[in-house]
Image (tube, rainbow, N blue to C red):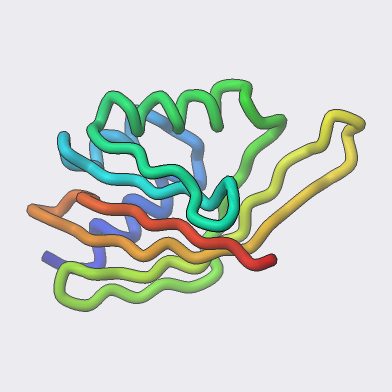
Length: 118
């Protein structure tokens, strides 16, 4: 296993391609969202996680875009620092910066724990 899986995952998120994102996640994937504060929401299983991404990229957020700021991979664990941009209802831009702590198994994301600044 190399950092190739991390690069592919980051690229899939950057493109907003839900099928590509899910192809890089295990069937039993666990995702913990950034909100609501303080702990976010824990979602388990590919079908439930897919629903989160479909909402995010399919219309739940206006013009969503993730971009990678930095990342590193070491022995099945990775940290991905990102920026998420979107448009508010009035058309003004919004953004947050955050970090994902990822666990990989067999070349796929098995756990994605997300945290944001502020």
